[in-house]
Image (cartoon, rainbow, N blue to C red; front, side, top):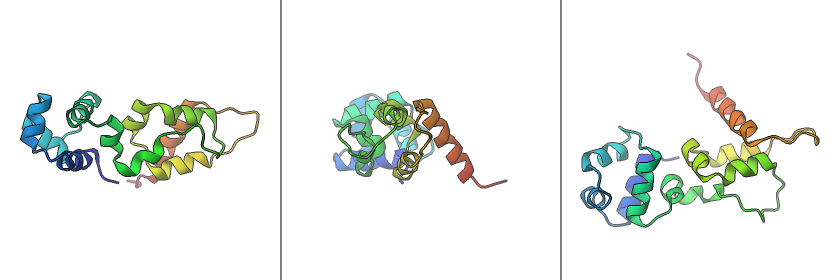
Length: 139
């Protein structure tokens, strides 16, 4: 999955804007935009909001790209889902900041607990963080 800087660059090019044009449009330094696009600096959520606004896009379009649209939870979806997971997927800023992948969403959807247990949004966040830790190489 492309990193945020790569997706910002792709969106900027698709909008037929140079770095200079976009930087001027949103009132940021072109050098900083370049650093973000090249993965040398991590943007803040506010910066991503500026980028999206400057190109007339939604924040999730910039952060997730075309392949990320599946992450928007549709209440009409027929597959059963715990309320806590639905709440996480509906929380746009949480989803974007955690950069949840399609693989991770599918993994979280497979979690099944005793029918009396109603896992919270925090439960799914912790499950995701634990999963990510388990994938990190041992040093």
